[in-house]
Image (cartoon, rainbow, N blue to C red; front, side):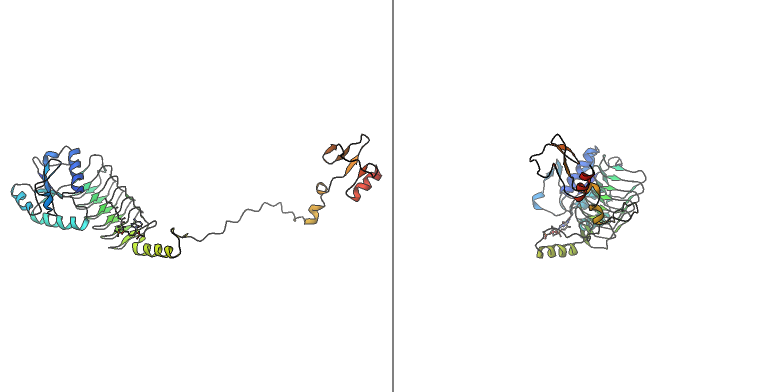
Length: 313
Ligand SMILES: CC(C)(COP(=O)(O)OP(=O)(O)OC[C@H]1O[C@@H](n2cnc3c(N)ncnc32)[C@H](O)[C@@H]1OP(=O)(O)O)[C@@H](O)C(=O)NCCC(=O)NCCS
């Protein structure tokens, strides 16, 4: 829960989407009475004398000195670009402003976690035990930061990001929407992790990585270009097809019968037909009516054995 000193007045530095999200957090915290207005850091003429949700845009960064004189000494910098936010935070703290954080009441923050000044922690995000967030870190909607993670100053974790335990995020890094980072990984300073990426190893400073598993964007583009030249629009199979595992041999350890042996088995011999006195003939399957009465004395045979059997009868 945000703890403000009595009658503490806050200026929101920024007048874009992030600033509106922070205003909404203060609304949820029932702290709107503390907000004095917005600073349009881009000095956009269209924003002069404008209002954002009934709160005045007080001017550009030049208006900050006047605010200090009016005893408005607390600020939160709400700029999405990490390097711009870093620059502004450095400037306004040098002027004498104190940074305040905005933590949405629906965020779940461990009592053992440390949250630095000027952080923006959005709805539904989770910070697990022993995690540490530096100065002016943005934790967007539904991001989760697991145990013992360290998120350095001015880093930004986009919506739905999943950081496993003991992940180190470098200063000013941007972790793209929906990406996930394997436990224990170190992400360098000012790294950009593309949306949906799965980072499974350490990433050096200033690199942009994309994909699953994440590789440098340059390497990714080379792979895509290669596929285009091949007339394909999907990635090739990364792993070569493996031979199927050997099937268990079911054997009773007897020597295998030869083809001839199998043919000589009695049940593989052609059935003989034998006509009995009722003018029906039998095969190995039973009695059948003859279609044509045979001419050879009432029986027909398909093997010499049958003839022998007839004589025996
Ligand atoms: C990775 C990223 C930084 C690249 O931005 P970019 O340099 O402007 O790149 P582009 O958008 O021009 O895309 C260049 C190529 O990379 C591909 N690409 C971009 N992002 C990608 C990603 N995350 N995964 C895979 N490929 C990606 C594009 O499809 C494009 O390929 P193409 O030339 O074949 O069409 C960006 O796409 C990104 O993911 N940013 C994170 C955004 C985010 O999370 N915002 C949340 C704000 S709260």
